[in-house]
Length: 284
Image (cartoon, rainbow, N blue to C red; front, side, top):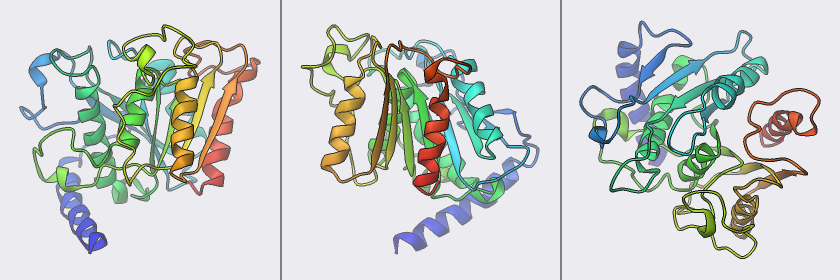
């Protein structure tokens, strides 16, 4: 029954999307929301967009949605966006960069409008699966710092609607099939709005994440000197273990926050290769 409903929804959205995207080109930044229907729009000056990055030689039917960091105040979309999409494209994997709304909204939690954009982005990518040549059940997300927190919101809380439906697209499921939180921020109570006040060793996890039935496998990347404590990643890893959800973790020695798209001789520079190897093992 669920499969039939999903197929019908995807078929409906495919017709709409093909009509709307007939002039869409790879690399173009496309608005996530119809004009005048962005939730909480009055709280932001930025317009949320997504950018499809298509590999020159496609080798996979997987897609990775990328959420750059920026403390929910800005968008670090070069080393934590473009560089990441380029890596996956080099491996033959489709990537989508989401430039969600910043800065932090007023009168609601710091991540609410970004979370709305993230759910809308997953629905949009899933609705375009046939057009993009991807499997609608091989969609994952990765994000950095605040984007890492957003990755956790997107992957653990997809069964909680972040906004009221605005059109037919919102019939499409917004769960992801795998997640890669990279030095996620705001995971522990002693750092829920900024760097951890301690080392996170004795802090509890924030209540942001639902850990619902659609919570997927994850691969965590963190540095052990990060001011956003790696114990946040450890806490989520532990929670996934209690749920029998597969997870992998890499915590790098003597590494601070924000290494993102770093490449070169530094020992952390191969972190993306570790992620890609994990994806292969997991069937993505």
